[in-house]
Image (cartoon, rainbow, N blue to C red):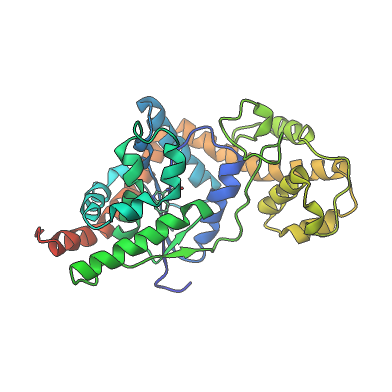
Length: 335
Ligand code: TRP
């Protein structure tokens, strides 16, 4: 591990976790722990930029934290914490609002997508969301931020803010972060009913997704009923073009076993879904059954979860405090 590599990443605490969350983001974080010093947090302040139900938010924070640990985020090796437990995130975000330019933020495509046609009615926080994200990253002097495509622009904005702040105030305080492609490939998991739309907790069909809490029988049944086509699996990835459902199931298999699409096809080429589906169900059960067991333990002992998060927050707070103090001093507000 290069010793100066520090990863910071946040995830919004959504409820109803499913296979898409696990394979798309969480398992990648788990693997990153071998490559860098990692800080992972529940971005609950970011969740306030859209309408929230206070009871749900609290429950979702717990659910997501439990899922992260159950999936393999090691709270001893990595620092796992809740963003809102550390006021320095909000404080630094405000300081950076003086540095970030309106025009830069206004170019963010995520804001345009999320606000949609209702810009006038969307929260100010939804607009300044990436400035808080920059604070999350710069507070801990992250060298690398794992990016999904949709977040790349926010990391670039963070770099611009870091460089402008350092230049304007003639300090060498913030580290412009790089996007990080480590942790192996993330699978973009699609609906089991329609290979062209993302697996989503808001899809009305329960059969479209696999929840982290589904029983072994439910998992097997959902895979058995997953939409496919009548052709056998091809020998190489190009043969999956135009077959979104087949591509999705092969992608899921590889994401679970850590194999590439080529490797999976190498084993199943020429076989139909009658053979492939039970094999897929088996690896999924192998992944999810132990995970479910650990989730149950946290459900029985929520105090343990709170203790782990409090410990992570204390460590993160200590790490971030000097950066915030220096930022205050740089702008002429001594600490
Ligand atoms: N915006 C990120 C997302 O929706 C979550 C996030 C918040 C984040 N702060 C961050 C990611 C800091 C990386 C670094 O996925």
